[in-house]
Length: 374
Image (cartoon, rainbow, N blue to C red; front, side, top):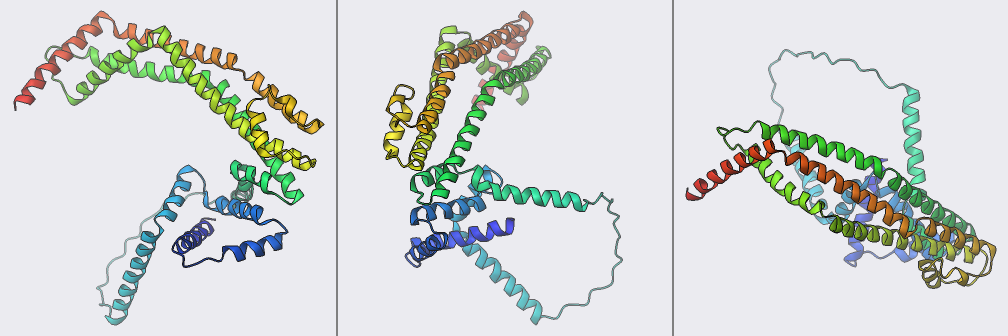
């Protein structure tokens, strides 16, 4: 699979650069022949080709995709590197062919014993290969939501339109499920974060307790002092209940707005696709406006059961994840953060810890003028 991905990436990069330099322009002929072969329109053929190319190039993760994009962008320099690499190897091969190899004295060969590892069984290899093949085949259907949305609008083949609408609906349900899981697991993440910060704070307290008037300000203690100075300023901000609530409401509004716009965007293509399937003139521009203002404009949908069903599901989803619920949720989480900040501040406000911090501060302030004088 890696070899195929590298080969497709090389061909795509070469074609894009040759096309940008006006040295190659045959995509119209290729698209027309593919459209005739697949019995599709030109626009949906382009989308299908992009789905296949992106599925091959996207790799296993985000950074693999970034590497592929960088490879295509810097392809001329990479091509020069390839040419230089081949040139050097050709020169070395010619030199070895012309110059006779010297007879080397015999040396005793050392035999290294490599510990044996349990070889993979054939069943395990078959399972791995089958899993990789299924992942590669399913990749065009599990990713690239925007391309599938375009296919809903551009498809002329009814079977392709059915598939595109179903895939977009699955992507939408997957996004909703991920948002729900994120909200439900946020409390666990908050508790884990609190435990982590509490452990780090205990380490800071232990370091401060070891400070004495004879302690020299080492780089580690200087970093500790800088960290505690910034932390105290941050804790004072977090103890301000009104400020924390304002930031919580702002973050909630941003999260809710992004989620609503994304759901409205994807739902608009489902409206458009369902309308096309039942032969109703319902352009995408009207769909996006109705989708953005669901459930207020749900009455503007065409009077068909399928359209009303999609609109009802959209309205229920918007109302169930209403602003009041999310605002209350974020307010509770911000209250938890503020309470935790208060607890940490009390821990650092212990009389012994404050004395140790004052000693460390005086030590660092005494050393700073000396360095400046030098």
